Length: 430
Image (cartoon, rainbow, N blue to C red; front, side):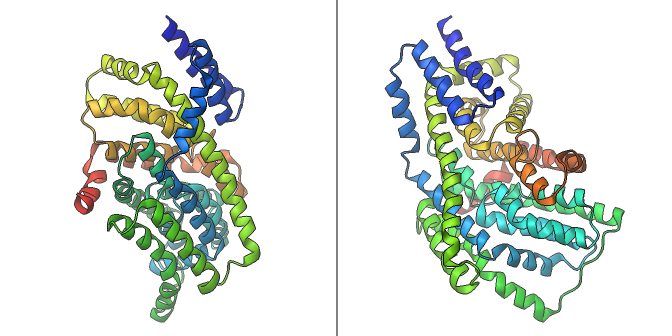
């Protein structure tokens, strides 16, 4: 009885505070503190768990990746990636739609952030598409959904969050595991763009001469090479994910200031301010979720949920579908970081009991939560996209319905075809 009341206080209190629109870190801490008082546990333990959660060498990579993305986002990288994608696919009918998909693949390999993708590329792509005859709804919806590739395509700081929450899963393998699903998602959305472009007779782009293509490719080389530095160093064992992120920051600063010459010294305070704002939110969520997770483990909630799900059915397919539905619903009402740190310790024992590889589960979870970034009511990428596109959420969501269907279809393939996530990391890292 005591355990049941404690779980109700912890989970019910958290949900109630979220409904009352209390900030998530405060909601986590408050519900944890009340439950610990009820269980007669010392509150100092909560403070210790919060400190322990952010005392991680791997977590040091997160601010460096965010800083590298901010530097390159402010240093003219977005324009060059769009130009590079345009040189490859812009000449075909609906070419700017394909440019949108391809540019997000490239930018995802630099920033690892869907919101950064939408705000940086969207401010270029949406006006460009509208100017040449694309519908505002389609341009905005495509920009929002393609941005989700950035969460999957390495490097992704959310993969680092999962590695920590899962108890030391290889960050390098997680990076590699997200590459194929991210690219498949982009190609699937590109295929849908072909269909829509032909049906609505969207215009063809202007073909570039070979000389122009070579010039654009040369200009974009330094931007795209960032991913090579990060992934090549981690996979090759030259440095850790944290060290690669620091090197990426130095490289991004040199390229943006001295090669492209678009990042000025006066812009640095603004860039650092954006990084600090993001980090304050992320690290407060991680610390609060660490204490919350400690009490969940103390109350044996992971074991209780495992037994509950297995009591419903032992069919692996049905269980994975139930987990996907649960994650999709959570992604609609919460941000990614708290879900990763709260839910991973709960669901990981369940999927392991089904024989699922933690790397595979990590990609499946991140994919689910990426879908949540473009679904109301807490879809941050959706909100930013609508703001950039100057259009109401209702109009964009209606246009996005077929794109949602494509994302769910790719998610199901990722869920039930493990090799899609595990083949590349097993091939390269063993």
